[in-house]
Image 1 (cartoon, one colour):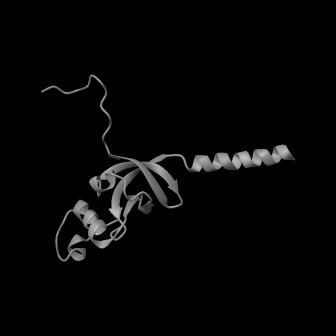
Image 2: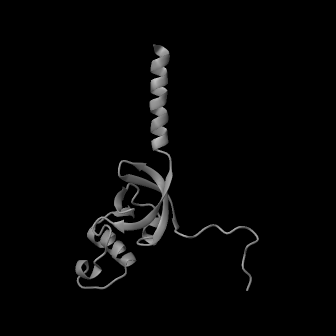
Image 3: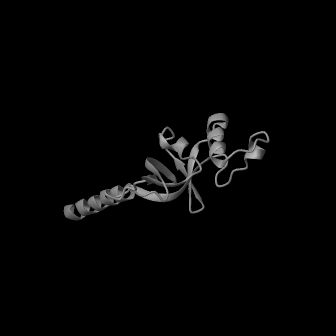
Length: 125
């Protein structure tokens, strides 16, 4: 009986660690006010601005939070002070982190389509 209990507890811990493992998704950083689409002229007193500038303005001026939009879904970001959020706002990115429910703790952000160059493949002009 003790062995069964130990196996069950071990399986539960293993499942918990597997769910908390880092994953990578493709999508965009947005803000909780705009979500999937930005209507900057309506939201910002008639000013026309880029999606990037709209995200930053909503976060800084309107108290919105950064969110991650991927596959039509919107995910909260737990570490709002992560350094790359403002820089990559509204860009196509690859985001790496741990998801709990509908919230992601970001550990890495990189531009989509960018791959690290191999040594010896540098272009010379």
